[in-house]
Amino acid sequence: MSKYLVDDVRKVTTLRLKELKDQGKKIAMLTAYDYTMAKLVDEAGVDAILIGDSASNVIAGNSTTLPFTVEQMIYHAKAVTRATKRALVVCDMPFGSYQVNATEGATNAIRIMKETGCDCLKLEGGEEIIDTVKKILDVGIPIMGHLGLCPQSINKYGTFAVRSRDKEEADKLIRDAHLLEEAGCCAIVIEKVPAKLATQVASELSIPVIGIGAGHGVDGQVLVLQDMLGMDRGFSPKFLRRYADLSNIITSAVGQYVTDVKNVSFPNEQEEY
Ligand code: KIV
Image (cartoon, rainbow, N blue to C red; front, top):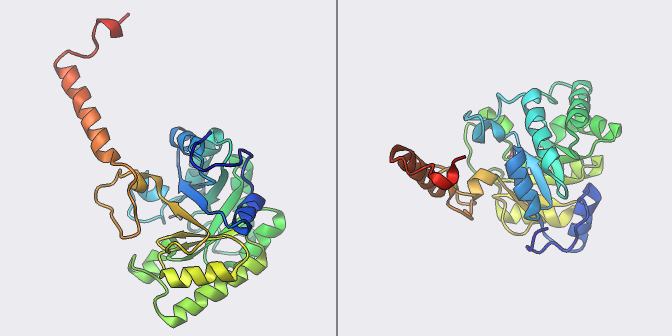
């Protein structure tokens, strides 16, 4: 188990997330999309692992999250749940799988839960999807909300810039956060909004607010794993802290391997049968 401030080795549940907030302890969440990485992330002590539909960008190389399907989310989520022992496993519902109506949303939600064994689902939006949120919660499936910059709506915004800078959008975000809490969501992710607004929402809600690009006044943080490991040289938004420089480590390791193969210095006698 991790040496990094993990004082409780029990499996993290949605209830435990709330306890962390109540105890004033911060929540550490990261994305993961495959078995190998999820195992390492879980062993390092994160409280929650998100199978984000950012897999569409990070794994599949799409420019948005929109093309990702329920089947693709299920494929990634199965790999992550197989690897995870302690962290709460949260799976994004992909674009188009819950926006049409509550029945279709609940049907897809049940399918994802049944086939993946994840613990919780994440949906983007507030008032617009509240009937679907309630229906899925009624079925007994925990939901994490997602407000602020909602990447599935990127074509509506036309920009990845910071959201809710104006009063109208900020007021809507506050209203939506309360609606999601009243409906019974277990937590809310708030993406790329002014820190002051996110702090206000976190202080008004009793459920945890987990930020990405939302400052330090919230109850926890989430980052995309490949971004915080420095695997994408071209992606460096202000909110991103890089904890490693894996692009250079990986390319230099692969470069060394290529050199060794060409020089016939790999494999050597100890490395053959
Ligand atoms: O899909 C994702 O990775 C996310 C995080 C950025 C919160 O929703």
